[in-house]
Image (cartoon, rainbow over the protein chains, first blue to last red):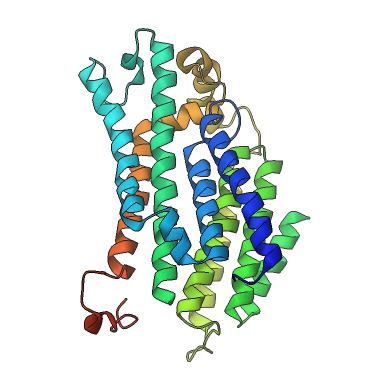
Length: 138
Length: 180
């Protein structure tokens, strides 16, 4: 789709805002609607749009496949790791209250980290699955 | 009104043989579903439905169509038995809804069990104003961890089934498309 000037310009303008919106949804999920799942999907959609407009090779340069695959595991490990950290700090598994001196602050921190883990894995899975599909079609 | 649109689109999806149109219609279906969720005050669910159902799923379906074919084959057998099974299941489901409490009924069991506790205690206990986030990430942390593991497993599964290994020689890489 390289020759579609309008699509390329609009995508180039829009993608930074899509990524910004994904980050907003990610880190504002505890105040408004949204959270890790939605943010991950929106973040992944930005990369998918980039791959659709500018071609898979350019997208793979921006997000190499082995990095994306690594992030699939990193997100899940972050989630599970928060649970283990709570365990080591004397709480139950996934009991975020133990993460900080104040239980409420610990809960807030835990929720933030866990949502981040969800977002990372979801975004990485979406990007990886799309890249795999697109790669097969060539 | 939205439900009527949903029914029309569902019928159109059943009738259409052009799979490209079917994918587009299912995207519209998801978007309508998201609007209904907004009306039902389930903004988080609507968000997910719009992003996943109307966005990513449509793209992945189109990717699948690009790999396979965009015309549905005319079925060989008559659809009588599946039709009967579907009608009986649907009738039983509708019969089941008769016993359901009215929408928003405060005395309904789901609204009296743990929901009041979450609504009252989630802000002082977690410091997170969005109850949905508090329940998903904290009170139901195990469930969310399980969901994330499902996504992880699904992603790895797709990569293993469809991913092409680059370190193999070119000779064997030409066999793509024969598997899966």
